[in-house]
Length: 412
Image (cartoon, rainbow, N blue to C red; front, side, top):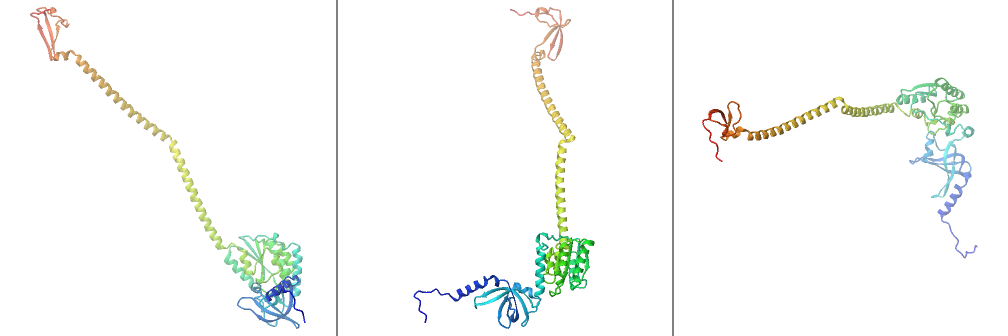
């Protein structure tokens, strides 16, 4: 019997212990990247979209979970109990039940391992040569004038592509070089089709496409010759091989990978006929707006020049001088009238003064002017008026002839 310890020993909770086990398992690099083969049992796909199943063999079983994002890639694969699968993932621990499980990200039917190994070998080889480098990928033209297509002439993929191109960009010229897309004759035919398009048609972009299928059906697009032909193409290449979950080596070598042939046609025509029409209308609107602004500006400039021309016009100078002449004439006339009025006033004053000094004025007061009749000289003294002389007497209203009878000198 063990002796009771004298000191309290730290005890772990179930949660603490489970988390420690989880850290140990999930921290093991060897368990973070594993392939496991087994038979499926207890398969379920709840409404969440996650996949739950158990892999078993004759000696053990392993609980597996595949999250929705990875499970979407398996929609083309009919999963059911009893299937033999090869799955890839990492070991994790589900703490609420204290169970370890395999979190799966890739699954495939058992027996595809050899093809996958060859796929990975070729991928590593070609990637090391730089055929998959991001820096060598070319941009896809926004508005291609010519589009080349390499696919089977009898497949549904071709009709899907043509329908999309007719709908989105009917102005583009389409050149098809048909080729088988599976079987031993497919790789050299695909290479020939790509080279023929580049040599004879010179398209702006090439679509390399086919519909979905098994890994064996798609294997022609993993052929090294086809991959190198895609990388060597003068025109940028868009691949649309299989379904969204299918990846082939040409997808890595192409300039753009589309999940389906239909999507490849859409990516090849990013600028549609509707965009072109809208851009044309917008361009016309901008042109009209710019033209109106230009016209308004030039009209304003013309009005400014016209105003300046009127200001410097000889006619305006003549009008100004004519107005100035009229003004000078008015001022001259007004000055002359004022001068005449002043002179009239002076003349009237002089006339009044002259009138006041005139002998006639004196005569009008009863005086008379006596002159010798013969000489007309004024008689200035009584002594000159001898008796018997004829004299002339000038009165205010006439003249008299008189004869002196007698004179009466004034006494001193």
